[in-house]
Length: 444
Image (cartoon, rainbow, N blue to C red; front, side, top):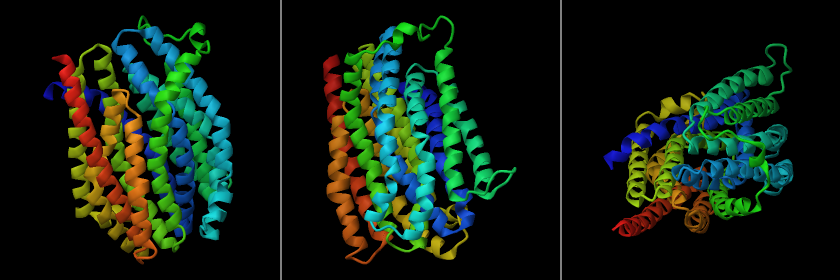
């Protein structure tokens, strides 16, 4: 396993930074509007969660790029790499219109679900503003998958780091009316995020169109010819992955909406702890992306033993980090929460929720990284089914029962989410263990 540690860290480091950069935008939105009060935090919570649930489906449909491009790159088939990413762009653009239309329907859904009307009034303009970022986000996702699969990570990290600076400055200007800009409040935060996502899409597109000389990765006009066979392969891999991600994000989105029925302080505390847990999850998510690429490359060059080593290395790294993050949540919870708010009621509720989050960190890391490892071997269907059963058939019903009939409120929902993550993590590890033994047998 130590043989794969260096390559895993070399690839995972920039990918983790990219995932953190992606998540940091939502954190910045929450922190900057936090001065407007718990209702503003709640509106950004509901709005960003609703948008993310829809956007994640589109980005998930492009996850097949990890498998196909990594295998082609491992086999030295550079034409296949180029042809695959262009078809991914077509797929992303085709998804943009229907998914954007769905985002614009947010107000109807939030009303139907009984969310606090004050929260809805602030959230809907925010959602409509970030809805315009969906197309650029899917283009970014396609070219990002391509660049990381072929080992060009610097443009991705640069795009996200600089986009976060733009997002922070634009938030400061558009939320509070600085630099001569209008003071749009929560809605201004949505427009700031859209502006930054358009920028980061332009950066990765430019990087992909200007590859290293002699690399064999320069896109030509012929690469843009529609290829229905490749699109079908992307759909076959992408749909289960998209369903899996949507189900996982959707269960937290549903929990957020249910907390929206409670008081504003509970919703604000829920959003803060969810943001913190989401940040730590970016590390196993980055390791999952790296594992998908490394496992795919190893299988592309017909080395299943190396694929198994890469898979277990990524899982061990993810488990180690998430154990440390859980301990951090337990040791300095008040300091973490105080970075977002000074409201004593929000902090008091957040302390309880952060304790629950500490308990599921390890299992969240296991299920996150193992999903990427399985994607590397071309299995996107199994994580989808495990997610459906663990979260939707078990975790969410338990959480609802504890929260409302049981009277535990937000705490009950988080206990239910924790149950789902524990079951998903342990189940996926068992499934990967069996696949790893099978891969080793094929080498003998």
